[in-house]
Image 1: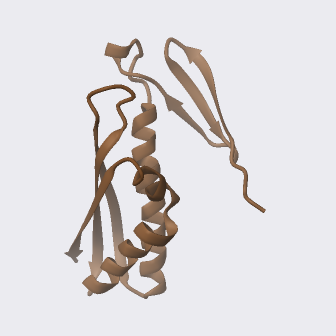
Image 2 (image 1 turned 90 degrees about the vertical axis):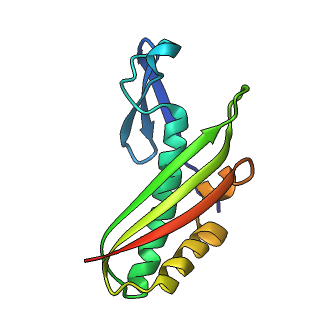
Length: 142
């Protein structure tokens, strides 16, 4: 049976919403000042990028741990370029994986990223239908 997820966004003031997830967590969404908001939270489009970062990040770190890689730190940086015309979807997204640790094998990182891109990350599968997504990685030896 498919898992059903829900989110509810409740207007607080101006253009700011309090969004709550199925699991009960909250996040503030707002638009920028130019669009009538206060910039007091993530924009909805920023949340999409954050969702992609978290989705692929969870996949990659899980796979690297299973491969017994000596990861001591990990960061995913995502940048999106939007179309100029409405609905201003993302047309290009870059994902950079920064993996810090001891004796990390590049082949293990490449494989973990590839598995996330092609098999596990639902956010990437959806966003990839409208945007070109490019992934890179850097290994930082400590």
